[in-house]
Amino acid sequence: MALCKVRSYKALARSFPGLTRYTGRSYATAPPLVVPHERIEEHPRAFRLYTKSHIATLFERYAPRLDPTSYLAAAQVFPMRANNYVVEDLIDWSNVPADPIFQLVFPQPAMLSHHDLDSMVSAVSQVGLSKVSLREKAEKIRATLNPHPAGQKEENVPILHDQEMLGTQHKYRETILFFPTEGQYCHSFCTYCFRWAQFTSVGSEQQFQSKEVKHLKRYISQHPRVKDLLFTGGDPLVMSSRTLRSYISPLLNSSDTQHLNTIRLGTKSLAYWPYRFSSDPDSRSLLQLFSEIVDSGKHITIQAHFTHPRELEHPAAQKAMRLINMTGAQIRCQGPLIRGINDDPSTWARMWDLQTRLGAVPYYMFVERDTGAKDYFSVPLASAYSIFSSAVASVPGTARTARGPSMSASPGKIGIVGIEEISGERVFALKFFQARNPAWTERLFFAKFDARATWLDELKPAFGESNFFFEQEYCDISAKTGNRQGSSGQFFN
Ligand code: SF4
Image (cartoon, rainbow, N blue to C red):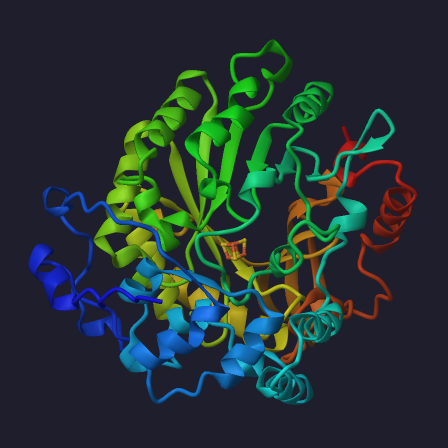
């Protein structure tokens, strides 16, 4: 395989004199980094894909001291996908393996338990072991890693005319999620992805996906409380503009879907392939589609996933954001708090500052979900709250729009909004940002403080209560969804 030459950072800096590269050190000495508009030039770039079969060659070229064997072993279990932009422009290879973007896209050996890592290392080193045997070994390990968290397969699938709408989720009354078939992969994969299982068994029943836009439209027309439709995956922006249009156009200018306010596109393409908006062959028609959505009287929001400020510092990302803003679409930014990648307040403050300067809205900080290599990436809830509150305190009011740290748990999105001492007991103050039953939204409740807890199921109610206030009702909802009576979003319409 021919690898293209690393684009020299010096060459980039010559084109963009204001550019300072983040090197994993403090930002204290780095000037603010938003490239003036007139210096952002057009650089058409061809997409080149890297998968686990390229690990050895990539290491040989960029990190010759790193032994690829254990990385190859990890990449048998966790999906691996990267591209030339991420590899050449975003990863700081002089800082590998600690580099945050390297941690973000290359499955790490320690994501597996010692036992599983040993077993996979000996499997990849075994001469003559068939691909089928290797896959079976990996499958067994994946099955132990909670591949489908938060009851997605059982509790969120809506029913239309007595049929399950596969590839669709309706958990919250106002918001429906649609997983278009052609959008079930990404320009690059995140090692911590909570939908990682979607990428490991392509075409199997593990995947949520649908092409049924007619069913989607009919469902929305029958549910007037649905205001937001999120296209998600994977990443819907890996689809061609034409395909994306085929999903969205039927929902515009139709009396059946008049009540639908907002089209959301959940994407990490601004971070992983910003050329999608500026110089890909169909970039213009993509931006044109955004303008048409605005012209139809609906709002379009790009739910942009960012993990690290470096993703926002690149001139190509900044250009893409400016082009999107010009269409009337809004960019809202969200991402998880991940150990070893962004677990300090200055990283988040830096991200929120840059997002605000680039006309985007900081939206959510998520807690790493209870799936995959959670033990490797998770940050205790107490630390997450401390990181969030310190970061918020250090940015101006315009950048304080983010909510979090939020757990996307089975009952709903639950935020940690305080750590307090009440009546002599140290407690977490928790709040539903979103809830299966809309009546729970914004309700405060309390859990005993636990410095090591990383997820809702490790928390216990405070003040001697035996259950959290929503638990019984949540069990009732689960029983109904389990009996295929519908999804929670349907029950409260
Ligand atoms: S961009 Fe989103 S869906 Fe794609 S790998 Fe990352 S977390 Fe998963």
